[in-house]
Length: 293
Image (cartoon, rainbow, N blue to C red):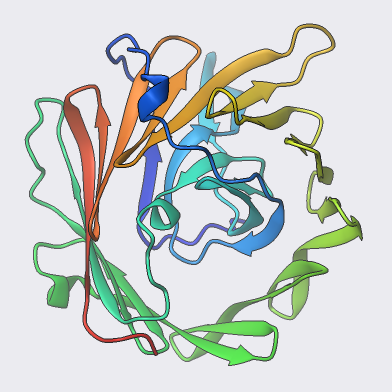
């Protein structure tokens, strides 16, 4: 069963080549936010992949690779990082955009081709009151073809699609749940002040000790205030493998990968541009239509 919310955007950052990295002057860096670990629900699915899990099959004498679907339930790690219950680690572009979820808005995403030209088909996300609508046409009014209604009942949120309950989720300090057809499909349980257990198809623990986040047995995230960077490692028996470093300036977030690729998330008022070197990959722009509800 897929738990993905097919509402807007899936981006793989590191599937293509990019310019070699250029060191970021330490004087221009901003001190990273403190790392956190708290249950979160990804309502908008505005993600850019850092680590995307995959499944493999052998059919007709050929190997086939398939990305594991996103799970909407997971952990907010701070600094725009989101780790879902299917063990996908992503940049939360809505977080980096500082999307004001308390207001009605229209969000437009433009993707770019390899030659740097904007594609004609655009993606829209429209929030109006308790409704979220999405589409991918040239006009935002025409694009809003799939709509869901959110009904809040205490700590629980019920999501309605086509006048039927699609799923429910709840968030609290002690954990979170995701349910469909009246059955809990995934759950996060707090087991101590700094440790959570994810109850899903492949259970794992996530914990924070001092300035280090441990994500199952596979990964950990570490913040270095002296270097002003966040590092993501793959855990090994010996010599843990550095996968990414993330640094921030007043106007951009820079992701450097182990293989020397660099990607930049440039931030402006109500706008975000993701680039590979000088080539734009996508741009997001949000227009608010009212004050906070």
